Amino acid sequence: MSQRISLKEAERKVFKSTFQDGLWDIFIGCIILEFAIAPFLSRSLGDFWSSAVFLPFWAVIFLAIWLVRKYVVTPRVGMVEFGSWRKTRLIKFNVVMLVVCLIALILGILSVLSFAAVPGWIHIARFSLIILVVFSVAAYFLNFTRLHLYGVLIALSPLVGEWLYVYIKVPHHGFPITFGITAGITILVGLVKFIHLLRDYPIPTEE
Image (tube, rainbow, N blue to C red; front, side):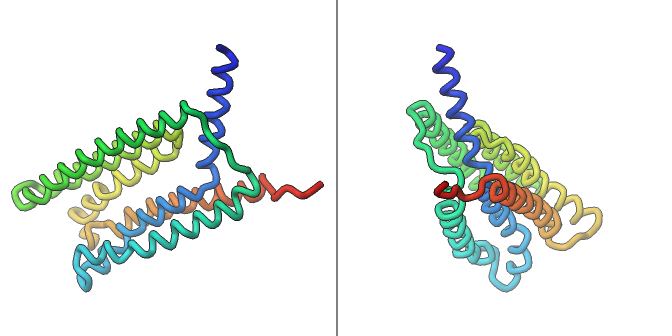
C-alpha cells in the first residue's frame, strides 16, 4: 500500500512539474491581453471583430509554445506517460469543465437577453464568478496551483475596472489598465519560470 501511495505521489509530482516551465502561464497571459487591447479596437472593428481578430494571434502563440516545449523543454526534462489514475482524473476534469462551460453559456445567454434590464455590475459579477470557478476547477484537477491566483486576478479585473470607470472616469471601463496588469503579471511569472528551467536543466551531453 505504501509503495502504491509513493508511486501515486511521485506521478502527481511529475505531472505537476509539466506546468513549471512557465509556457502555459505565457499563453494564458496572452489570452488575457486581449481584454486590455480589444477596447481600443471596438470603435473601428466592432465588439465581435475586435475580439475575433485575436484568434490568429492565439494560434501563432500556441504553435510557438508547442515548438518550444518540443525542441527546448523536452530535451531538458524528458517525457513521461502517465498511468490510468491520472488519465481517469483528466477525464473527470474534462467532464466537469464541460458542465461548467454549459452553465457559463446559459448565464451568458441570460446576460444577453436581459442586458438592458439588469444593472451592469450583475453581468460583470457573473463573468467574474464564471472565471473564478473555471480556474479553480482547473487548478484542482491539474495540480496547477498558480491558476488559483490567475483566476482571482482575472475575476477582479472587470470589477476593479468598473470602479475606475465610475469613480475616476477611466475610459474603456478600466479594462486596459486592470487586464493589462493581470496579463503582465501572468506573462512575467511564465518568463521567470521558463528562465529558471533553462538555468536549472541544461541540455544533457553525451558524457
